[in-house]
Image (cartoon, rainbow, N blue to C red; front, side):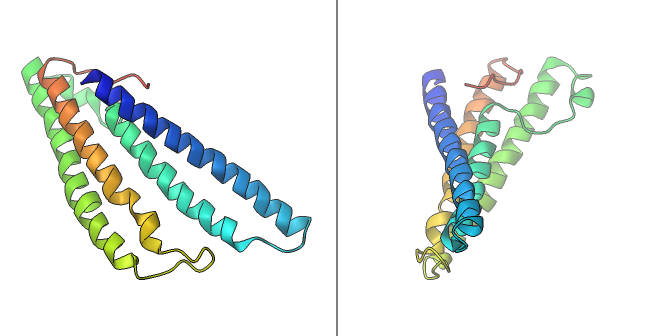
Length: 162
């Protein structure tokens, strides 16, 4: 399981990094075309916005893997180990349900709906850019199940970044 988790996380880190690098390069291109060529590139600005959304959602999946989502440990730390495990599993269950309902179910709905609409500058279906919603939803669901298994085995600490 650890190798599986680390493999997926390395891929996500790579994709998020490539997305960030592409955003930097496209933004530099946007500035160059606007101020040097005096003919702004509209497609690059639109693509940067979509890449930002992809990078953010991929980063959220990485945070889910590391169990680094926001929490208030001062309350949970006062309980016994079994109660603490229960609270941690409850948090993972809530994250699982959010991912299943909002990201996967809602993401499939909006992606399907948006496949008929084209982006203004790129000329590709908007649904292509929305595919990241159900994709990250499934990744989050996998990570939360793995996290719950870790918690039940006694590992209540956050994971280190890969």
